[in-house]
Image 1 (cartoon, helix red, strand yellow):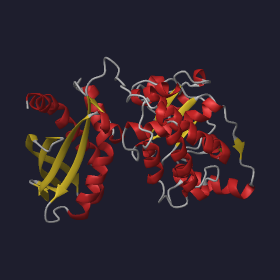
Image 2 (cartoon, one colour):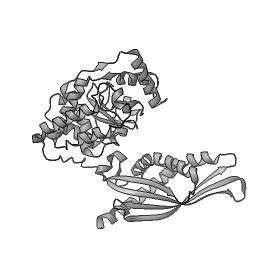
Image 3 (tube, one colour):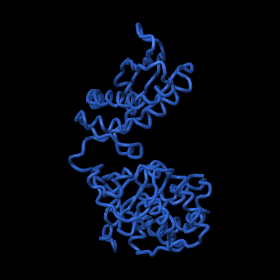
Image 4 (spheres, one colour):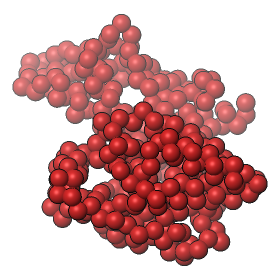
Length: 384
């Protein structure tokens, strides 16, 4: 079973104090959310504003924030801010499915739906347990209680029915594919414990009926697909899909653990490198890839060696020989390089710790490789 927030998808929680939405600018994120690593995204904000155009209570909407949490969740708070997690965004396929989630949440704002507060002691204790299990020690004290209170706030099933139906109307009016609403629901059919736990949401079969009826009702309202333009000064958005491989089990389990750790650090590394090197592209995350140029960075391990350093009996060298290949979306080979990565360590250090602790450094190395070669590969793609 998914923990904490996956149980809350589409639940509109009552967490206060967020700020206006911009393009990944931490200065636009309020202090209360900066500790969560909240970011902004121009497309999500544009979708929300388009959906809300001409609607009652639209002036109450303040913006959207994205939380870098793996758990799936979307909610709109009492101050009019829509919060959505990367975990949910990564499970949505394209702009239309994102529009359904946003439309469902802002429907509560449009309808001015009141919230209920959970008072059952055993259920409140279960909520607290799920919150602690889902977030570990990352949120404690006041922050933990804030989340528990938010989770314990919910809409009635009747309000959720209204929000589903209203979301389809809002999508049709704005030009989004209303059938994507059914696709989103289909993705959650197999989510164990999801519907039964969060009782404010109708059963999945009932939600399908509600959405189907709304699609038929508002079919005549459907307009042309919307055109959402990025900010005028935004650099080309680029998504780099990192794949690390080895042949014949070279490096074994330790290579696999190293590769996993590198992948965790790669996006932040390439984001930092793009700022530091003043590169002419804007790296985006996996959930943003539908609107970006897509490249594949293939890292093939050719040799893995641990050997003593000459003339230094208590020191060792861990050396990787690798082939780096940057390819375009159609798998065309755009740039290839043979590379070495070397780390030295003392006799008393554990190899496993040395390898894993080197992942951040290696991720930065890969990010630099991409930043240095992007102008070349972009030029090749333009001339093809």
